[in-house]
Image 1 (cartoon, rainbow, N blue to C red):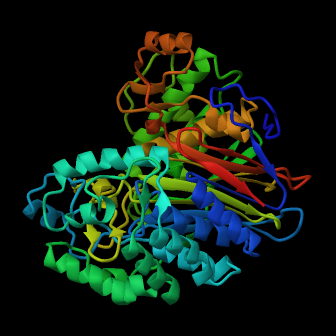
Image 2 (image 1 turned 90 degrees about the horizontal axis):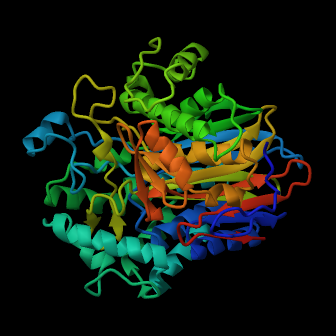
Image 3 (image 1 turned 180 degrees about the horizontal axis):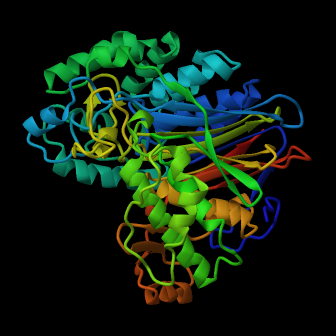
Length: 544
């Protein structure tokens, strides 16, 4: 039963849920949350606040997102004070460059898509996402929205603790793997004093400030068809890259129809493929067929793990750009196929394999305003800072999203020029089954994301937790085969019970691998928002 206003705080963080009437911004970094709140105070709406917060996050949390990454959004636009309205989806993921072919990758000496350098770089979608959201739904001037991020980049900010630890870990990795001229700029931009910043240390980046100003003044045109595009093209040509001005000029974000699955009187909404939100919906469809009583019931946890494994094995086999999928969303979510997959869930852990239905590094934020508009927004470099390629003089770190492409010609997600790959970042949204909006949610973190979605949705609906407790609760994640990572504060009897059923349980004391989420739920009667924010990072909620 969904009880967002419950006062219970059963988990270790002991954070209280946050309430507000006139506006709320939940983000993974306090300075970014405050930026969004200030935009609301200036008369902006939830969309304006989301754009400003997202831009600020590229500055204060570069370990997960940057100007050279991708984005997705679910946007609820209210028609009246009762919250009635419509949910819109924006896919701002980029395509493979025209010159990036399987043959080109093989000629470069790779048997699979690498993680670093130019090869995994795809066209960035973040600047286009900001501009498109502002154009269609924003109230304030675009330059006003990016001004706080520009100021943070120019004047600097003290780095927060979890971000500092991720920054230092990235530096250690990059000193081993970034050895060519294409990636040398990372150290100049993100370790200008000779090392990654420590917690509380001041960091500034004038190059990024100037880039944000150019994006703001041109409504992102400079990035795709102007001076910034020319600089990206020139650096790519100089250092053996595949990305060209023509790839950037041809890019446009895409408005898409969100997809949903019914779950116990509610609808859970996701962006359609090429995003992996479909994985979460497939798992929830399987789980709806079981009686669910308690988080601490071994049978419940076992079924969660098995449903997730089955859904993921299908997702990894079939999700890509929609026209390249051999099995449709409708087939994968269909009743007959759901029953078939659910029937595979027995008493012991299985080795999942894809079924055959009928053919047919990230930050997340949530915003809400006094009119009932709500935004679920996510943007990412994919893997930490991304490819390691930083365009000189711009502060633009380019993503490595192309790492997810397959080079197997028989695979649905095989690399092709102009194609969008299987994408990990997914925003979520929850409504009642009558269409009443409840609010945005998300859990970032690579392939943890659909697993996080399933867990927080069940925490809300099945286990009656409020948004904060739903995020506080310990998490698990499937890691391939029968391997399950699980946070150390899960009850020991549950972990033993899973091991007895054949799961390879790996207890983890580092919470950073289990995703970082935000959530805002709106009470349909009072219009009051209840928010939760992630205890595993430097997150905060700012309210109006």
